[in-house]
Amino acid sequence: MIRYLLNNKKTIKVITTVTASNKSIVKCRSFCTSTTNNDNNNNNNNNNNNNNNNNNNNNNNNKVEDFYDAEKPETQTFNWFKSKIDKKVTSYVKEESISTVSSSLKEQPNDGKTFEKKFEYYLNLVNDDFLKEELKNASEEIQNNSPIDRSNLSFTTLVRVCGKLSNEESRIKEIIKRLLSLNGINLNKINNNNNNNDHSPLNIKFKLSQAHLIMRDYLLRSNSIMVEQVFKFINSNLDRFDVDNDDNNSETYYIFIESLSLNGDISKCLELIKEMGIKQMKINENRVNRLICIGYSNSNQPEKALEYYNTSSNNDDSENLVILNSILNCFSRQYKIDKMEMVYNDLMISSQSKDIKLCDYNTIQYLVEGYLKVGNVNKSIEILIEKDNELMMTGGGIGTPITTQTFHQIFIKLGKQNRLNEMIDLFECLMMKAGKPIVESLPIETDFDKLSEIGDGLVTTNFIPNINTINILIDSCCQCNNIDMAYNLFNTLIPKFNLQPSSETYSILEAISFKLSRTDLYKKYCVDYFHIIKKED
Image 1: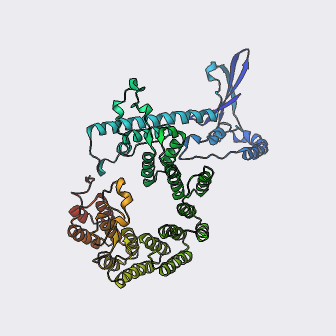
Image 2 (image 1 turned 90 degrees about the vertical axis):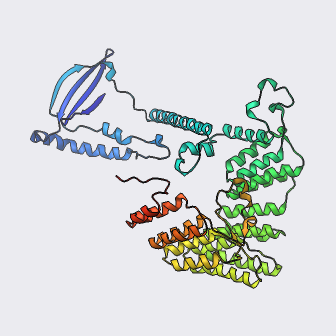
Image 3 (image 1 turned 135 degrees about the vertical axis):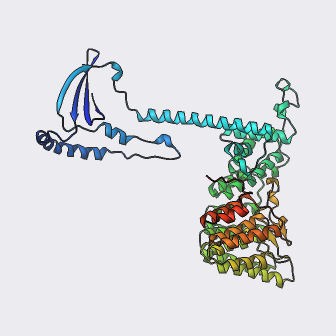
């Protein structure tokens, strides 16, 4: 067995271990890597060159490239290190004395898999310790009722606010807690000695509608993992639920299929719909057609969605509008503007033939987003003006509302093109026009329980912008480095609408101030109010 060591004096020491009679005898040779005695070594080097070339070719053929995955650092390989250890010595100067060493110098096996296992194991331990510490801090925050604001959004606070459901066991426990809570059972008062009582939590039956309420809440939060977990929990614990009728049992499937449809998992949607037919559940054809079409659209298959829509018989106009909006949105995402316009024109023709409104704020938003993706800002503005003219022609009716997000996207594009005067005109003359129906896309301090009401329920004809709209206007000015107009909007619009600047407001102004070396403006308007106090060195 041969080992090679390189000391600080550039001398290579070769240790050859010979095992005999259970004893290790080590022969040491030291080789100088300097340029002395070159004449004596030239012949040896020339003889070895051919051998080295052959060895190098073999090594290159057997070489395994190293790789590194940032998300899985335990998979790091160390082939480069092994190649350094196995490097051959091609020349030497003299042989030194033989000495003995203890058995502790025996070379340990280089097992890469063992190292990877150990690294992953200890990495998990480190992560566990970190999470335990953060959870402990979160518990202290809860006990002290510490306020949650923008100044302490640490990982501790995020754990406190969001929680961490990382495995099936913790998810099921969370579901059971919510079901018990809906039935008015306090977890702190559960007595294991009374488990034989009829009122014991072990003997309680839940209403299936309660589980559906939990599923819809997770669906509203786009938590598809928990929606699926509740679905599995219901089907594996049917004896724990009172099923009032077959419609309730079908609703369990419908909510889960809707979650899959929104995520574009069309294959699983079709499997569950087939399963409903096998179990002879009541199937609402209009609802199923909508979920299938949306599933195709969200899986980036708008052509299939449109084909399925044209071949299906759906007489519900509200369902048809949702389907066509999903197809329109998919074409918009894929930059297929011609097909997007085709769907919209068919929608308008159908609307006129049936003398009904088959266009809503989502339709307009998807159209605008599609044109903005291809840089056609003028066409986006034309659509808004067209819908405003339709409102005037109807004699001041409700008309088609426009979302604030639609305006925001146009404002940003106008800012990047340094068309700030057009942006201000669009804001003052169209968005703030009296009687203009507006839907607020980014409400302030809206509870999740009220998110389902965002839409037609929040359409207003007496619109007052919140701080999010003002931040977009200020940021649009910063897109073209117009710092004077940015601070002018800050000084005029915020007091005009009686608003409170947010941390985002100050962040935008801070960025443009330091970018353009206008710290005088930052110190004048922001430094005393920004959520992070700046300190000069």
